[in-house]
Length: 192
Figure 1 (cartoon, rainbow, N blue to C red):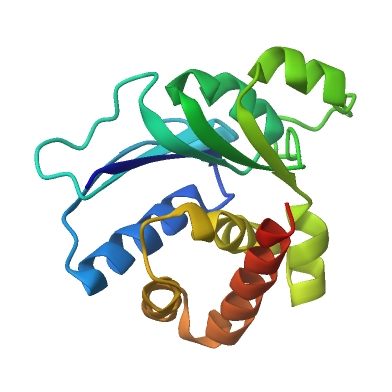
Figure 2: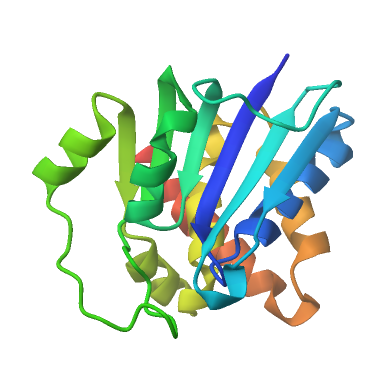
C-alpha cells in the first residue's frame, strides 16, 4: 500500500503541523511513512510544501503527477501545486486565498469558479470554507485541522489514529479545540 499526500500552504498556516499529525497517525498504526518539507521563505509569507508518503519504505519525495491527494490551505497554492496530483488524484483546498501576511497586504480579487476550473483542469476538487468552520469551532487558527478533517475519509488511516495523533501533537491546552475542528471538518467533507 502506498498513498502519497502533498500538503501546501503559506508560512504560518500549519502545513508542517498537519504533516506531523499525519506522520504520527501512521506511526500509531504501524504503517511505514516518509516525509519531506520545503519551507525556505515561510516566515516571509512564502510557500510551504510537505510531502507525506504513507506506506512507502523507500523515499520521501513524491514525483510530480503522482500524488493521490493534494491538501491545500490556500486556493492559489492549490493552483500552483496542482501539477503534483496524478490524473485521478483528489484535491481538498480551503476557500481562502492569499492570506494577508506582512508581504501580502493588498486586496487581491477573489478567484472565480471559472478561473479555478480553468487553472485546475478536470481534477476532483473539493473547496472547503475552512475559515467559517474554524470560527464555529472556536478559533480561526484551526483551519488546517478543519482541512485535515475534511480530507480524512480519503486517507488510508483510521479516524481514531488521526484523533490520537492530534492529541499528541498540538499544544495540550488546544487539544479539545482541535479535535472539535477536526470533527467539524470531517462532517463538512462528508457532505461534498
